[in-house]
Length: 471
Image 1: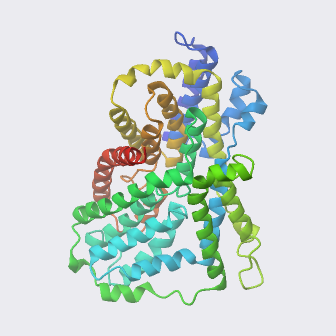
Image 2: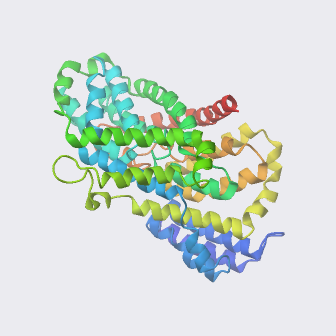
Image 3: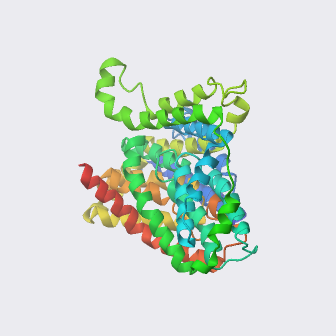
């Protein structure tokens, strides 16, 4: 029903806007671009069409409406950061294929302690670490079966939602979303937000820059989430038989050749992401300026996966396995970039800058808090990727308009696009955890609301503090 209303409602609003004259001072092309933005945002938020299909609208609409020609519109769908997303996704697929992710998960959980609270924290930490490289949905698919096996080994009946079982299911889902904020490749939402802000506000955010803000946020948020779940679920020691549960964790066996060869490669890629930006001045003297980027490092790591043998007569990864990369997300990312390009080319960004200039009278922290609250509210009812694609162009215009520190507005808004915890349908991890039957909706709503409210000062405060320390 919502999709049908969004489809026709969005079209009606789009047509009406095209028929109406532009507001005073706004160029006609900017008004037509605004109509496209409203149409795409409506379709994205209501999922009237598949999200990736909506991303194709600018290529059709911009040339017809005289905003950009077809060549420039097509070019706007691509960005160097897309290669980071693609390379990171291929590396993540190799981690999944070799089973390295499961080894890490079981190693941490096996050392999780003897109390329900300690075991819950161990699962959440394991999930958060894995999802910094592997997508949050894939990580949840890895961790939930392990959690269910542990509950069954501890003689927990199916459908029990009280105490530890409910906390464990929600803890994995929430930690998957939170952990993805730690690195630029942890969630497609991160890269989409960064790409749009870079295009509109000319703010360069590298893998290292993101990690400087994201890792501290994860380090604070996971314990906070853990405490909220312990309180909301009323977890007690009697909820869980730790000795019986550890028997159900199982063993992963000896390290395979593929795992032994993959670990140094992944480590080298991550180290390069962290070190190369620091060596940029020296490298620019040896190589053409800007020739080594986060994306080129990711692609090099991905290409090596097709060359390094895994010990069984085949490479670590073959194309049939790598072809599972999120091509749909990449195309949707392109739609967001095209939307941002139209906003800039049509003069809409400049007009927004003038219209929003009065906001510059408010303290930047208040503006950032208001932005984060709005993004969190939207992402509870729309997909994280759709929220980032639809709202981040507006954030880019707001940065230009207010003259505020770009990082103070861009980073919290980007984080907030993945901060959806209240509803089972809000994120992939939430839906997967809900399917276990161990979550009671009233408790999920309560825990999610508490996290949402805590997230506003937490995200803004983390970015403000880290920014102040690094200036």
